Length: 165
Image (tube, rainbow, N blue to C red; front, side):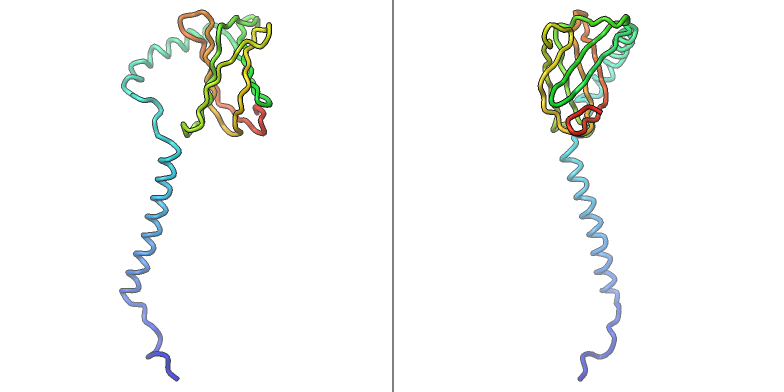
């Protein structure tokens, strides 16, 4: 019984098929990664970089003026509740009219959340209920303290099991 004329040869056609399959796998992997990256992050940091560059010096001056005040922020999150308190250089609480906190993921805009805090009883602390998912967040708080520009607090945080780390 004979099944062929001998061992099969590896021809140029076989090599072409191997090369096409190899590069097709590479292209499919690259396209999959590019599509996944494009769906999760827009790539935009600012809507218009030219306008943002024109505002840079003004924002830097506001930041220096804010730092010169010597005020300190206390931000906390525990069991679904956000707390924010602002103290002056001597450690006394600062009277704030309103506080807005924005939670942003570092690499996506789909989970951004803005929470308006309210005064927590008779204290100077502001608080609000908010369900914030575990993970890394950039927190940006704007406190209206009766000055022309709001007091701005920005911090990168990690929430694990519903608690600020």
